[in-house]
Structure formats: C-alpha cells, structure tokens
Image 1 (tube, helix red, strand yellow):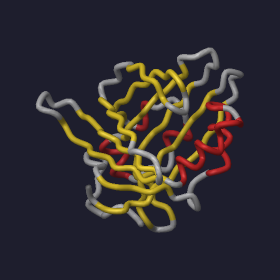
Image 2 (cartoon, helix red, strand yellow):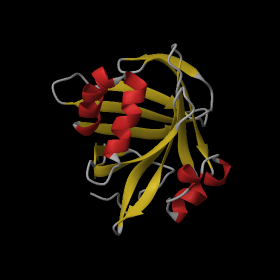
Image 3 (cartoon, rainbow, N blue to C red):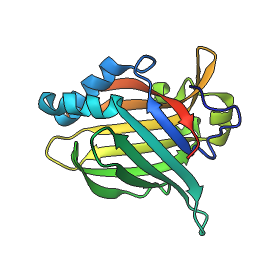
Length: 186
C-alpha cells in the first residue's frame, strides 16, 4: 500500500511491512551474508521479510529530531531502537550484527557521496531532506552500511524506501533498494 499523499519526510510516523516483490531481495540477502555470514543469513532474511515496523517520528522538547522504531516479527518479542538525528556516533549490541556503531541525520540528497543513494527520490523528499543512517561493524569483520530513507514513486504509487550502500571489508560496494508498504498510522 502506498503512503498517503499527505505523508512527508518531516513526519514518517506509521506502521509498515516489507514489500518483498518491489525490493532488491537477492542483493539484500547478499549484503546480509557479508554482515552476518551464510549461517545466520536465513534468520536475517526471515526477520526482514516477515516483519512489520512501527516508526514514531517527532522533535523532542529541545527541538532534536528523533525516530523510535519497533520491529515486530511473528513469534518474537518486539525489538525497540531509538534514532537521534544529530549525526553523533552511538555504540550498541545487535542480535544479528554484534557490536555496531551508528549515526543518523537529516540530509539533502546533494550532500550524499553516492549516486545510487542520491537518485530516485520524489521532489518533496529532495526538498525536505532524507534520513541517512550509517552503520559500521565494531568487530574484527569490518563493513560499513549507509542507508537513506525517503519517498520514491514506484509504478505510480508513493512508497517508503530505503536505499542501501554496503562496503565490505574487501572494498566491494553493493547497492540494494528496500521498499515498505504503508499499513496505517500508529
């Protein structure tokens, strides 16, 4: 289901499900293999494709932009995560990826360093800015992932999309597009 016409990158609050048919699932699976290894890849793919995501996007009393994320996977307790869009590094432990370092911000697409991450967005996403989430492994296996969240028009419908650039420890770069269907408001 497409996002409502009133949906804006200034408030991406809502419930979403992963759209396997419109996403680059093969490439996303390859990226996951590099991140977690072949052994955990199937678990990661299941978590990704059988989940719903709730996003609560707001500015706090100090005017700092925040996104509270809750992942829901069948037969598992929900997993919560908080993003603070200040481009400040935070270290955390991920059940899939191990120890990771992340930072998030709102950014104009022209400031992104990769053509794939810059392209495909709607005019309002370009005007309001997209959300950039950078993640890197803090373990011995080094990789970096830059993911940009925005609105893309696909087959005439507006969707919440996450474009991903993954750089493996060997320097190889992979790209993938993840598309999410809007289920409804929180």
